[in-house]
Length: 150
Image (tube, rainbow, N blue to C red; front, side, top):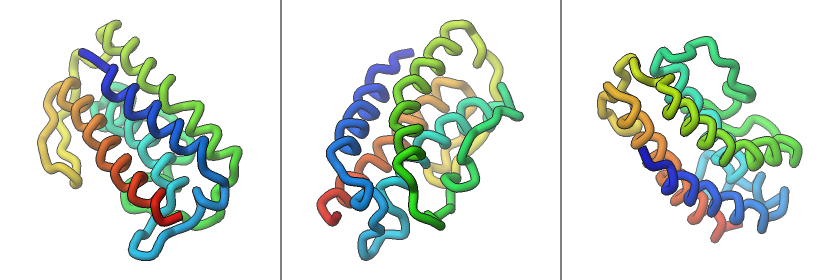
């Protein structure tokens, strides 16, 4: 399994976010229901949810900030720099941890699951990983559009 594409997208996200102010990251542009800060947290928690919880590999995995960034959530408060830094510092190590767990065979057996976003039943970890890459790209597109408006 090759994780370089997802690492590349996440590196671009990190670069983008480091060029923006805290105020810009917290603005919810007209026509959107979330802000840039929320998108960052959302992609970080979603990968852990999909790859560890939904697969059944670690259904009790503790995922910090899950309730604030899970599917269907919206920002309910100003998102502090400390929280943004937490996610920026987590994006690449999370993929490296997935890669290491994959190489160790942690994901040999997974439970099937279909996301609401894509509707494709995932029956093996490679399909879960593909979904995660597509999810990151989907949100990266939203982030790029939002950057032009903040």
